[in-house]
Length: 303
Picture (tube, rainbow, N blue to C red):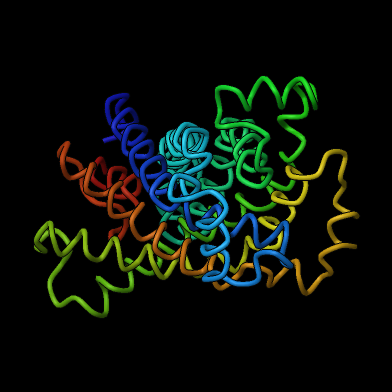
């Protein structure tokens, strides 16, 4: 635990967790982005799929899968790898007593720090992905889309959406990690009769998925306004946050595409925690959550 090999394993687990799940839900993400950009044409989830199928065929459902896979793999590596690092780092600073007492604050601070870095890795891919998915004919994918985007917007244009992306992803990730850790701890405390270390690995992974799904619902609600902003800014050249608020309205900012995003993010987050913890079990590490912070336990053991 907490060796370079531990952090490397968490980083690989994060790549698999985020890269695979986000790529798998590309069709849902595509419909959601288009509902946010053109609600007249894409009125609902079902009609959105119908429009895409009619205009672009089955292949159209996976447009933008390459920037999705690469972008969210890079994000997942930083998100999970740095979360484990910052969680340990902040716990050590706090000391064993305060680490146990204020563990939720440590989860929040660790996840926010990790996501700040992760979004720098994700942002260029997200910019190209949204443009490819919402502007038919712009590009086939990342290979031709990236140079075309840079030629049109400049290299800095790839980071035009970084502030809204932080606005979407940092609250999302704080909710994702803190609520997951809390929910899993409550499940082991109140719903499972045996201590975590005596539970079977399949049961532990089932709890990880369940905790992740519930956490994902909260994540979707908290981060949705910023998600609408990211889609709007990356789609319209020269657009500002003010333009987005004026066009979408405050109600639209909070609700447009939200039901689909709740389904998508709930499933996504549950699957991410399931995959991440399954990989940790595969390499011989314990699953996440459900026990007292490890640094505190380690310090007490020394005493």
